[in-house]
Image (cartoon, rainbow, N blue to C red):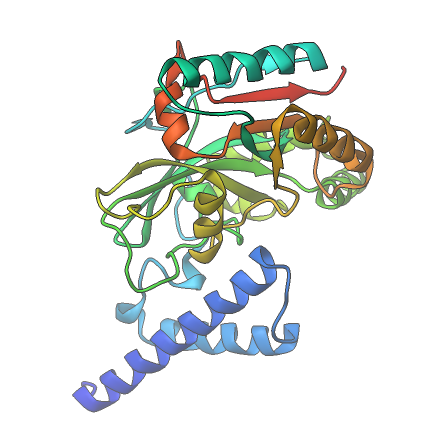
Length: 330
């Protein structure tokens, strides 16, 4: 016997409400680190969602929280060409090299008739993980790809969908037709230690370090294996974005703030600093915190904060002139 239109409409409304509520709790827990309900209540909501979808499979949608592990095992990865290249960063290893980098920036800006005494930098810990690019279309996650050679990466969509801090749908009502975001997938230290402990108990192979754990987990052909591993991700840059979506954004800091508003996890240790001294103070501060951070890093990154100046400075070879990584001693 068929369902009445009113009962279908009621079910759809309940499903929409459940999915929105669960995803909001996911963002609060995994992105903002501010849980809003007890685990028991979250589990109750998820069980109700699973129950409805099990009874009415025709109402299941790709962005449902139940569909994070929905793909079958792959035979091989397909290649994805990045709409915009995923560039690498040049490195500096000491104060003098950083000062030379800063001077080159200011000299080039002055040469372009930009009056600048001191550059403001957006600074971030340099995560030791696996670079990733996500593409959203009309707010829905379409694919995730590894960096690869910077031009072409591997399609790991089936695996990034299992990472709970990665939204299957962006938050907000006005979302662009195309929105690509770049970031880093990593395995937090606590999860890495726990994973290796359990692997040893089962007599299985362990990972050498969290970076290998993240990269290896992301390149599993079976998404169920990736889902069993405690991965997280931070996002910090844009790829291709529909024209007209970013007219008011003028700073790197504002890009990161926008990513957080869209439900994407960003690094809480990032900061805005002034000039070389501000960069060196940040490098020292993060270096002192390094052992106590919940994730592995191998340095810090400095980015010119003003997007107008980034565009003026441009790129050299496969790296931006407006950003550099300051590596910690080996």
